[in-house]
Image 1 (cartoon, protein in one colour):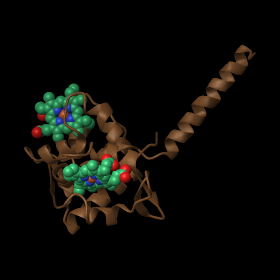
Image 2 (cartoon, rainbow, N blue to C red; image 1 turned 90 degrees about the vertical axis):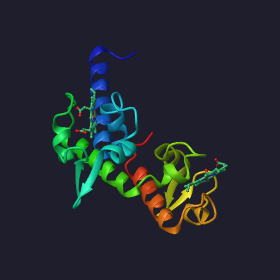
Image 3 (cartoon, rainbow, N blue to C red; image 1 turned 60 degrees about the vertical axis):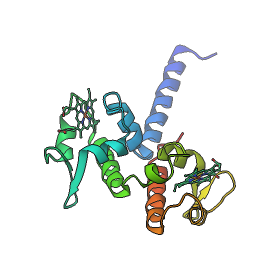
Length: 170
Ligand code: HEC
Ligand code: HEC
């Protein structure tokens, strides 16, 4: 049976471990989007980027107004975010414009959202993307599955890697 001070110590230690674990983890841009944007924007982050943003000389802007996305994120409907969180979101949006909806176009007819697909079905093994189920090499598999061109396969592999790399874990 724990006495009160012990309980407090255990709680403090647990909190410290959670915080330490948290800082060691990647900032997950998909989670940040769900928390800060999805309540008003029903579309997911990559779709919002394709609908509302554009890249001009490598800088991400709101397509309608030319306003830098970083400025919008600093004050937008009262949403407050830390610098690392908006940086992670901006990286996701910029990446999504590069990916250009290949997955949505080629794969979503049969598969779930890309980020859930990548994080539940795929993993990295010796820097190769393979399936959890049977260690199948994804790049080789896509050569005969899903009808993507070789340029599209390069894009898909980059996207899956990004989604695995930015996962904050289960
Ligand atoms: C409380 C509701 C709300 C939240 C939360 C919210 N938005 Fe919006 N957003 C809106 C509304 C309403 C508009 C359309 C009117 C406007 O531009 O303010 C909009 C417009 C936008 C636009 C287009 C702006 C333009 O000028 O065309 C972008 C880009 C955008 N939101 C991104 C985001 C991102 C990224 C997040 C999360 C960090 C977010 N929003 C969170 C309500 C919200
Ligand atoms: C016409 C439907 C269809 C399309 C389009 C399609 N797939 Fe599949 N895919 C399947 C089926 C069915 C399976 C086998 C069952 C399963 O594992 O879900 C599968 C399996 C896979 C697997 C192996 C999953 C595992 O866990 O072993 C990967 C990886 C995959 N698909 C990726 C893709 C990608 C990337 C695209 C787009 C370029 C794509 N698929 C397009 C139907 C499709």
